[in-house]
Image (cartoon, helix red, strand yellow):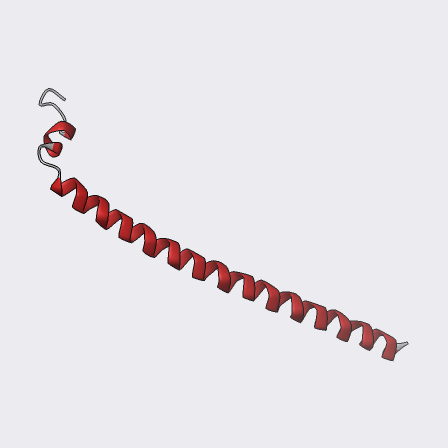
Length: 68
C-alpha cells in the first residue's frame, strides 16, 4: 500500500513539473511579445512626436483658449 501511494505521488509530482515548465515557457513567450510590443509603441510614439513637431501651426490649433 505504501509503495502504491509513493508511485502515485511521484506521478503527480511529474505531472506538476511538466505543468510548471509549460507555464514557464508560456510566460517567457508572452514576456518576449510584450517587450517587442513595447519597443514598437516607443518607436511609434517617437515618430508621432516628430510628425507633430514638423507640422507648422498645429500647436496653435490644440492650445486651450485663454478663457478656460
